Length: 179
Image (tube, rainbow, N blue to C red; front, top):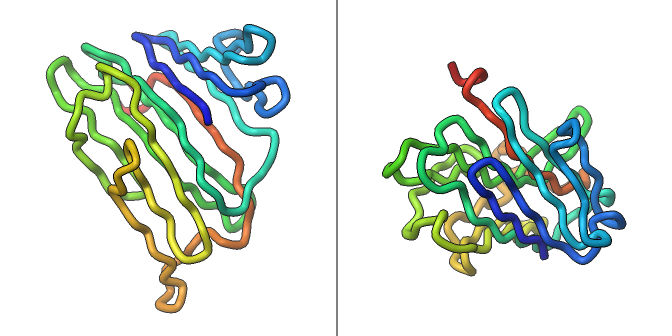
């Protein structure tokens, strides 16, 4: 299990050993592995952010991440936690949070659907989970299923079941991209 804390422009991630299980993929010094591999931090500045990925690939399983999002005016920030394959049949399974103006609710984005959360995701940690198998993907928040994406390949809907994925997470500034 990983824990992800998003501060005003800062993410802290906890795992068993980041040196062993994850690589920092971008960030030009804004990402660091600390405390003998027990802590990974991602930070953000105006022009860029930072991110990491798992060293291993996975085909099916349950993955949990604990997040606490940026409070106050976080407009322009994007916090993403996702599973992604590479190659010609690229697919993604994701949780994505777009920052907002103070007082506006956070909207959770998952694979083309949006959800308003029933709690303040900036007040405390909450667990966001993927349960992925050949039949379905279940998206859960704090153990409560919020979405089920069923395998409907029989009627022509693509489903990620043949290609392994890596775990990714990133924090970045979308202001320039969104303008």
